[in-house]
Image (cartoon, rainbow, N blue to C red; front, side, top):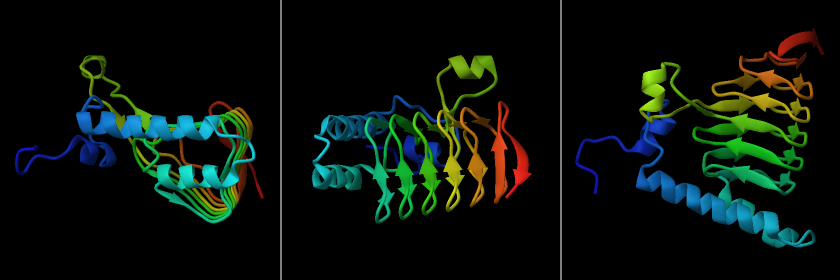
Length: 189
């Protein structure tokens, strides 16, 4: 039991504060997600109803008509919010140590990684063990190309296309094509 007035590690994690990932509550939540993603990834290709039930149990929010191709991996699942008609291709990874929100009709190519997780830049603080996480938001009708990596704290505007293989560490405005490492706006749409 937590002493009165103390902040849980989960609250710290979701608040963008340093937190202890080895906290028993967080470990239990990650194990839950591992069990559900394992069941999902091993399910039969034609077991559509079973897959939907597993995704509904795993994810915080899953909009109507949303689909994720297995294999899929995540840290917790409960911090993931997917809008209507979202499509995620094979081998997507979401490190949802903070909220990850994906808007309606957004598509993610294969091997896309969304990582809300990060670590302190100060080496002494980093090796001491606490971690950090910042939310990721992707707007409606965005397209994230194959192999793109979206970092912690990033917002991608609606109707934006992120080129394959891009590394996105800063916000990208709505209605543009952006690509590269580091990702930069190439042109408007």
